[in-house]
Amino acid sequence: MRESSGDNPGADLASPAIHLSGLTKHYGSTVALAGLNMTVPRGEVFGFLGPNGAGKTTAVRLMLGLARASSGEGMVLGFPLGSLEARRRIGYLPELFRYQGWLRAGEVLRLHCELAGIERGSRRSEIQSALELVGLDGRSEDHVDTLSKGMQQRLGLAVALLGKPDLVLLDEPTSALDPVGRHDVREVLRALKRRGVAVFLNSHLLSEVEQICDRVAVVDHGRVVAEGSLPQLLAGPRVRIQCSDLGPEALAGLARFGASHFAEGWLTVRGLPRDRVPALVSAVVAAGGQIQVVDPGQQTLEERFLELVGDKE
Ligand SMILES: Nc1ncnc2c1ncn2[C@@H]1O[C@H](COP(=O)(O)OP(=O)(O)OP(=O)(O)O)[C@@H](O)[C@H]1O
Ligand SMILES: [Mg+2]
Image 1: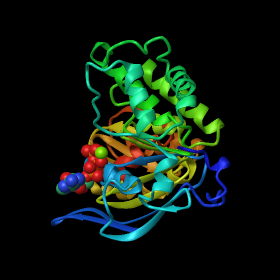
Image 2: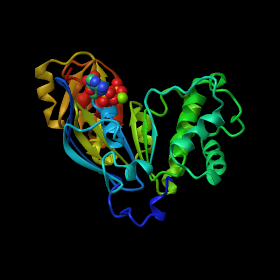
Image 3: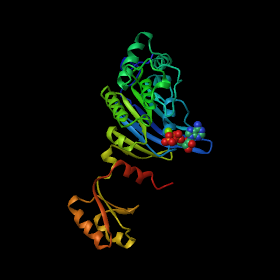
Image 4: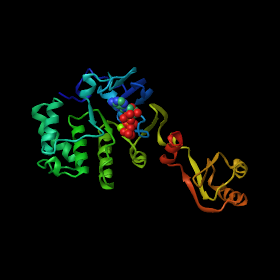
């Protein structure tokens, strides 16, 4: 039976939801993970961001025991990676999944209740509450192939929620959803958080991660390159100026305003207080820059992400 750790004296509630230490995974000569270190406390919504091929899905597969680490170690909910005790308490939404089109939504959920070993007597209520939580209430008799892509993704999410897991691993849960669907998934994740469930979210959708995650790790080439809460991760205030090309000399002359760089028609200056923006604008004009847009504000996660992983390919 899949039990919440509250019912199980064997589970150590003081242990983090996820703790990975020096985890590596090699596929032949490909290094999918190159020493992954990461800790996710219980009850946190944690975003795992990285470009294609960075190792996000591999990390999730190791946490589930679907693949074995080449070296390193890790604990999930206080149990070793891949152990049955850990797996019983994890909900999982795979990246690319497809249920049989001829199954009804309710049948998919019943099948997964069986696979997860959920007691017969509680299956009906488990299924009902999962369907309600993902907004598929009343669709249980529909065949999978009559559900839209987004509804199928919600069904996948419902499967991941069966058995009241303590940790849910979601590999790109909103990739097929429209903005309303994405909003709904965020609401589901918030509801899970209120229940103390830890959520580990692989995502490319940076704005989404910004809206929902307590903390974020950015992974690139199998390693965490930055980790923290969003305020910790983002560099604070910055001003961006869209202008004509500035040469190295002009840029050197702007150094007094703070760390600056020019790329793709945008000058970015870090850490500049608002009241110095007019002086910077004057200096850019004096250096021969023709200004189109001035955008003062907080660095976005997308800007930070591109700084961390953008230019290395
Ligand atoms: N079963 C496998 N056999 C061989 N190589 C693999 C296997 N699984 C993953 N890899 C390789 O490991 C690296 C990491 O892949 P992974 O799927 O973890 O990336 P990802 O961050 O999830 O990417 P995406 O954003 O595209 O889903 C890639 O180079 C990939 O080709
Ligand atoms: Mg992936």
